[in-house]
Length: 338
Image (cartoon, rainbow, N blue to C red; front, side, top):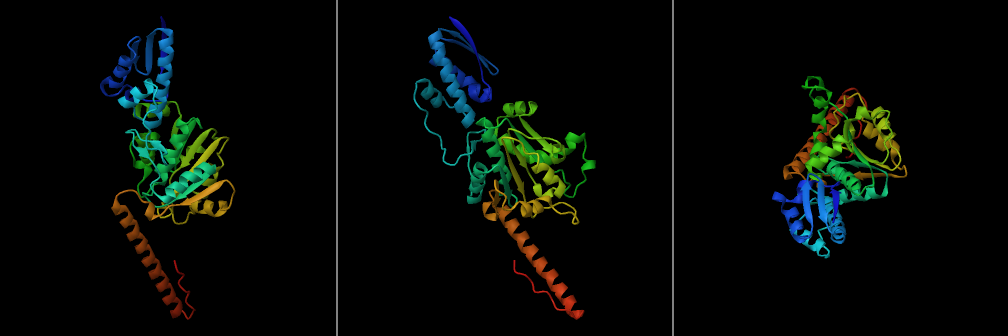
């Protein structure tokens, strides 16, 4: 008789053990010769050495399955322990599986281009309107890389730019003031990583979420680094961010050109970077549009309405400008087509 301790490292034990510990009870029933006690993320096993080896091998397979699909069903447990391949999950273009076991896949042609661009390049710029899935897809790619042990950490950053509100008047310390700006990143992570595992990753700094200003002076190795809302970076900030790139690191920069919250006198760092870096080898540029919007159907209509308003306002400004030129005896400027 020997005793072994098996530590579940890459999964949430709650998912592995099942509702009301149904999964672990099933595993115990399938190994009647072993005494199995599960506490937290540790499984203690006592029994015959040969039986123990088979048990340990199958637990490893079950753990791997649970980590990939974020779920573990009774039929999967039975298939693996009996030596059968579990029924294949939908894998097509799946990036990762959500905490509910639902596959997260590219939902448009341009989202697929983002996935392909990430695979082929170390830096990707994803530009598109609200709801086009650029940030969500980027975070899914980062989570997949972490699960596959291709990297050691995920770093997510945003510029803390005030969109009409004053940061200083928010309650709490600096973290409390900054967190509301970073909440969309937390939301995406909570969809893809079980709560207990996400908390552990954040406590160990495996997943780091920080304002852009905190990136200065760092060299980021073995990571996927995502800069969200990059349209609100200054020219100095985005240059600083892009030059943080270290060995075995990939960067994804996302932004929406229609939602720049910088002062009118300040140039968006993203606008300048797209112009400067165009044609640089190893950088992919993906442009998403209103056809990629995967939020409520009203979001696409709202984007359409604002685009129409902006075009009409631009035409009206040009008209007034030309009328003033005529009054002043100058030649009017021909209105450029959009």
